[in-house]
Length: 551
Image (cartoon, rainbow, N blue to C red; front, side):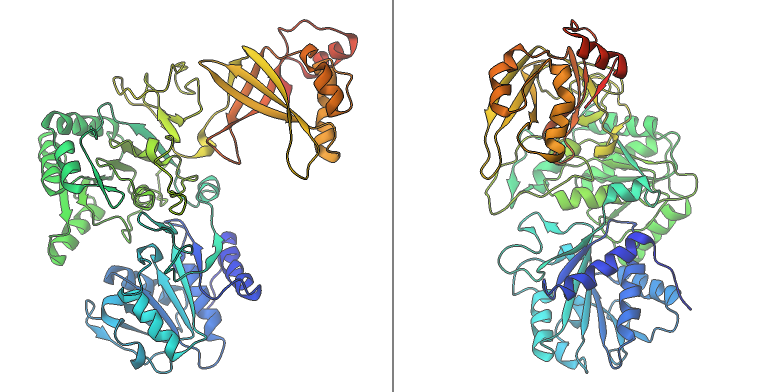
């Protein structure tokens, strides 16, 4: 029996083999967003490996639920696979099969008992591996390399970084040596493989003023205290009930056990069937509560740090972040609980009460802080409309949902919530009036000089473009297309700088976040319609392009 991978899954598998063929390293990562089908990728890698005689493959993860999912998924896709499971939690201890699914807690001291030694180790949820040689994962892999120095270790994760140490393949103590392939989450949403996510910021947010950090993350007890203000809990639940009225399955991330119980009481008061799961529950209680949620008996499930990875319920169409996190990985994992597709599910609504979208940015553009640079928190890559709570890019000056014009940057949650963006592709471009234009020479080592044009607009905002008469090729061609609009006769950078102060300037420009770096903006269109036409050539250009002059 054969199974067919999706194109992006094939690319991930090919990316791994190309990584090895190029001798980039032996132990790479495959970045696969939640819901992208890691099981199919793993199944293909195992099937390929089994085509070589006497090959041993070991799949390792940290929780029994993931082991069960992985083994059952492999059986569906590759029924002839000869595998065993080694997990105390699953009451199975089989180590003599060509393919083994193992829990790290059970197997970490048994590396020398796996005979013959594995040739390929696949680690699911690899972001859980710390860079510390004394952890179970690291000691286990070190022992495996003694048994078989040629063993290859591949990590699969949606988030290839940790809050405490940054990227998994960088820095001292790392297991992985690079990223073989990264599947873009935005692409999967655009192609319909994942559910789009949209965001609303809560009317009232958790006040983090007195909440400190320890190890880079908010201190749990202080965060729980801040989130447990009774009026905040009440307004939060009322808003979730209101905005979730047409949604079937609500997953809530709370700030602590007491906070979860306070939220549950409020939901029950609103007539909502709700359950709570925490790390302190017995496995039986937790599994029963989750089963009731998946069957639809519970509309709302509140959890305390237990459903961030490995939880699979595609019907989740509302995720409420009633907590704050400084961890980029945790933010992505929480949002990822709502990205799986399901029948009748148009998108997943993310309700954010901890300023997480502002802190981390759009889900397809998030990046962890560079630990080596010692950087601070930096600017918020997204902000919230004061009028309608739409989440927009930090550079946005006019809200694309309600038309509100942003004053100086601020956070204000005094109005009702509204649909907003969580993907960079959902951010709309906007027209802004040009107040002033500045020109200067721009020099870069190894390149001809160019003219940097800076447009000023709004409240001390600005955006720049570079005109490159001397660069040749596309860059010079683009400048030549602009010459008549500028009323320019210059063919070189020097001549352009001599005459630029007499150039015609647009009355408006259309801007959007840069595709290269969303912290900055780029110009995509020009409007010269309100500018006096200075010569016949420019008049012809005006007639050709109409109201909007393309870039």
